[in-house]
Length: 142
Image (tube, rainbow, N blue to C red; front, top):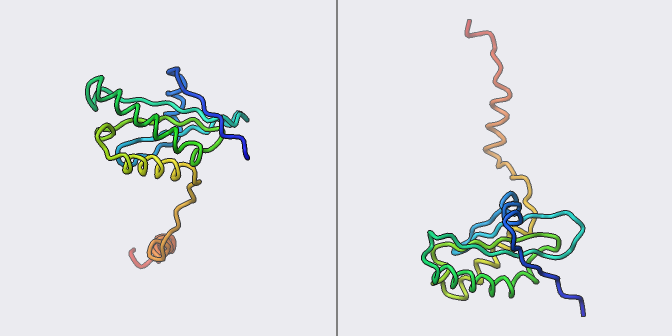
């Protein structure tokens, strides 16, 4: 059996600010920020936050409890070693159906785990790019 992924909590403000400089993915009732630490440490850092915009203390605490449980279930499967993740609660996090919240977190984590390739230009865009490159003055407009 393989050794389970080591997960530690992000607790200090500089850790959250560093994760905010990484990439983020918004899905449904959650925003997930990811920072690839590149420090050789394979542990995963996980932090949770909810702003006062989503409600009072009771609502914020409930949203963070739900995000903690979702992260506990899904981060070992879909998180990348050596990365820090910050889960940010959105308006519907506290009231969202559990299965839908799990889908939101899973979708965000899988999207962050796959490297983003350069966008492929379609045929029409390629033709338009060639047309602008080939449009040289012919000397007829003198």
